Image (cartoon, rainbow, N blue to C red):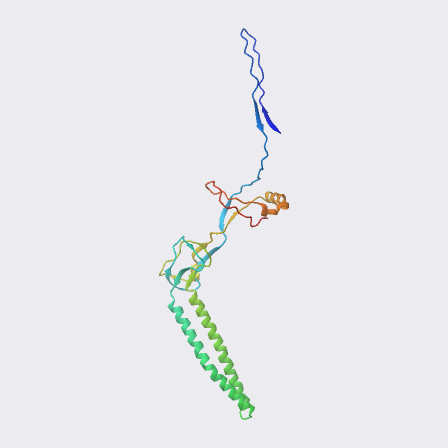
Length: 249
């Protein structure tokens, strides 16, 4: 058994005179038992908390803002309806585009019949080739117009969907920069911001030499995955969950 002995030496002084000092007591001896204890190496760095997901909400079409459907600073879920723009103008555009598609589709069968008739007459040698060419061009042109009208209908439906601005992620929403009754557009900039709350990043910088030393020291123990990250809050308390290194050097 090993002991660590801390001895305090006290020198003896003799005084010559008429009176003799009493003899000094033996010096006090302190005995400390040596014990094995695991010492964990630690380093402290100053960091800042950063959200993993951050989204700036921007209007994708121009229109009057009719409703704001969230409380500023509240926790929201992905898919929650946050803003609603005036929809009737966009709904009317959808109906107009749909009517154009229906009209062109109604004309297309007649163009196909005309083409078939011209081809049949040409096979019987009672009709000229020019009639076939004209009917074919008309049929193909009408088919292209139908595709174009369907594309316009799809765009109109997309724009109608943009009148509802929904949360793309879970998180906490900031204050809004616009209120009901204002005109919003893609050029207005950010309407509000959403920052995810779980999980979170804690970013901090370390000296290059320190990083290299840590990497070399823990290379045989799993690298940086063997390092445990603890977060000390501004009130000097330790956060209840350990962190995992995301990237280093």
